[in-house]
Length: 104
Image 1: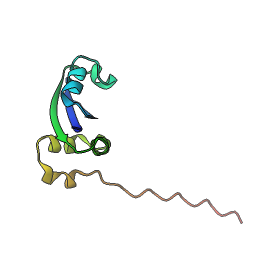
Image 2: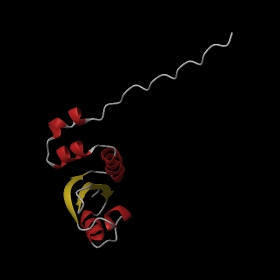
Image 3: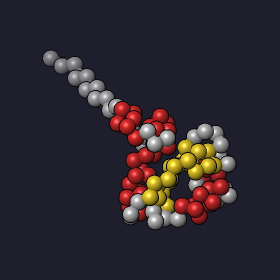
Image 4: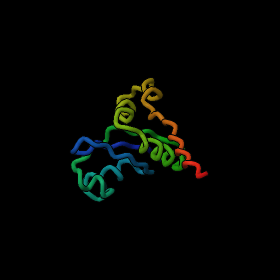
């Protein structure tokens, strides 16, 4: 079955991934055969996994969680789902470009 997973790296950072074989993929990361990011931050520990019906769902969730900040990832790991909406990054409106001075 496909999974979204999060690893806690030795430096305290998180790695977000998706896979169809969770045990094999975590073992690869642990042996330094995973992503370059985790190879440089061993050892790693599985801290969250969620099963999906289809790999495209797991991959979409991976991309979504990769865009989250640390606090939101920690809330997910801790199962504090009620906090997730409040921890969403706020999108601020872009400043309009100043109009060029008129040349008269």
